[in-house]
Amino acid sequence: MIYAMQNQIQDQLNGISNSLRAFSLKLTGNNDDAEDLYQDTAVRIITNADKYNPGTNFKAWAVTIMRNIFINNYRKKVRRSMIVDQTPNNYYINSGDKTVSNDGEMNVAFGELLAMVDSLPEDFKKPFMMAYQGYKYDEIAQELDSPLGTIKSRIFFARKKLQKMYSTAMRERA
Image 1 (cartoon, helix red, strand yellow):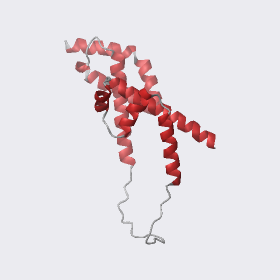
Image 2 (tube, helix red, strand yellow; image 1 turned 45 degrees about the vertical axis):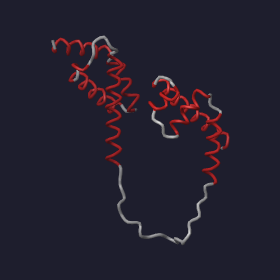
Image 3 (cartoon, rainbow, N blue to C red; image 1 turned 135 degrees about the vertical axis):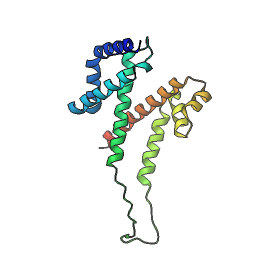
């Protein structure tokens, strides 16, 4: 039974091999890293064949495995390359008794962002602002009486729209 399942998984993997390789190249941007990612994914798929539910979307399952491997590897790489400076900062040049902060630019940028948020449609603005205020997605979904997936997508699209609006505003300034 398990052997038959692994053969079936292997056949499905061979069927989507080209698209998985293309996706791994898109993620990594490098042929060697893409091939390593593909091989890691193939091994994980075959060794976890018993966890696949027949009748479900095999390609989506495989792509999810690949994406998770990529993300985990990226996080490991970032942690390895992070350097923590633990030396005491005992030497301050010209440090006076008082520090004067200038939040002028930050306040202007924040004000512009708030205006951009206000221009969003209400369906996007409300969940976005609740997430900004610290509510969890499931709390927002419950409060707005909407499905969790709807809330997540509205917040995602609100962020994308704000990013686009902000980059347009910055380009107009330059």
